[in-house]
Structure formats: structure tokens, C-alpha cells
Length: 191
Image (spheres, rainbow, N blue to C red):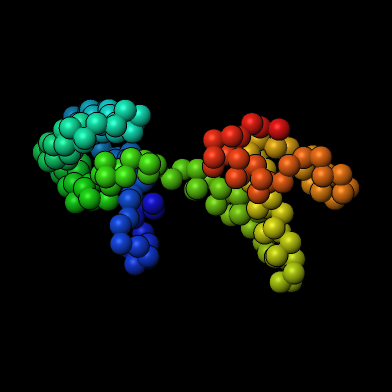
């Protein structure tokens, strides 16, 4: 899953795109004509209603519903509003049909990659604050600490408690690897 950046297209046979990223293009339209603003806002309402239908589909799989959702996609993204920039944007989304509707083939796919994007921003924020490390070893240490910290956070483990447990040699808390494995098998209980 990605945001449609060209380099990603060379990595895999099937690529799914993020609906949130696609939706942001519509919000970037800045109409001057009041009627165009209404057209954009009305279309965005329909866009997010369709997105909700995809979310509902993932919850209650129904092959007949997938066909219906494909037809609704075609109807929605064939819309002509008369607002040229909006119509061009709608056509661009229509052209991404295969990538945006891959979730109908693989319902386990997420509809957006915001969680991944937010995780990547942690690294970017650290870089912005500290600029860079002074050595390769410093980079490895920073990357390791950030990985442990972010993994603990996602598993709802207090980073301080986890690192203290490991450094002290007490090992009272389960390892992050063990928690990830439990979570993947559905046996996860936050410590």
C-alpha cells in the first residue's frame, strides 16, 4: 500500500493505494466560484460515503456486494460536474480503479496507510530536531531505540518500563517479540 509515488510501482505485482491520500487531492482544490465549492463539497461527501461502504464491506464480506461496489465506483468516478479541476481530479481517481478497489479482492488489506505514515513521521521529526547523528554507531543506536519505543507504544507497553525491565535483567515483562506473536495469533492481552 502506498500513496501512488512512482517508485512503489516497480516493487510488486499488485499495488493498493491509500484512499486517504487520494481524498486529500480533492481537499487541495481551492475553488473561487461559490458554485464550484458546493460541487467539490458535495462530491467529497459522496466520496467519503463510498469509502464508508468499503469499510462496511470489509466487516461483512459478500461477493455480490463487491460487484455492486465496483458498479458504484464506476458511477461515482464517472461523474461530470462542470467544474473542470474537479472533473479532472475525478478522472484521475477513476484511472486508479484497480489499485483503489484491490480491497474487494483482498479484504484483509487496509483502506489507508495512515498508521504507517505516522510511524515514519517519528523518524522525520527526530531528524528535524537533532539533524543527524555523529557516527554510524549513533545512527544504529537511535534507530534501535526508536524501533523499540514505537513497537512498545503500538503494543501499549510503557517504553520506560520495558527498557528498565531489560536493562535491570529482571525480565518480568514479556518480550516485544512475544507480544507481537501473541497479537498475531489473537491471544494478545496488553500487559
